[in-house]
Image 1 (tube, rainbow, N blue to C red):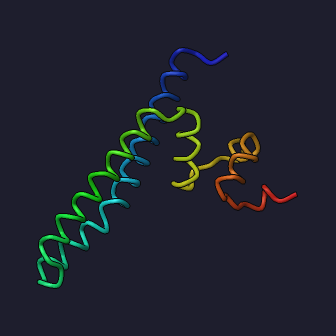
Image 2 (cartoon, rainbow, N blue to C red):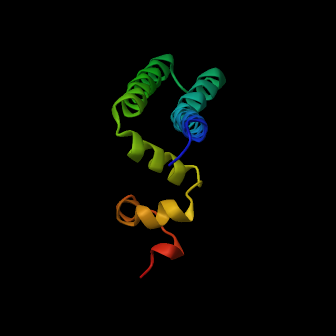
Length: 111
């Protein structure tokens, strides 16, 4: 049985992983908006289209918020590990089927 301290440490590491993943997902969603601002500043994107892109990002950011607030914790943690390339061999073995469904490819998953 894990000690209270090691459980606390594990939770802290998981929280840090989820924070990293949240930043990764948000920055990925921000990139097209950033490009829209660059195009707008260069005069190649009309103001109206820029405001449309701001709206698109806002909706995407709401989806990200929902995903992080209401997703199953263990699945969100596994997805974060997969997307950030931090899966352990233990994670891969224990979650083989769901990883396959998510499109994860690893030589360990091959029969």
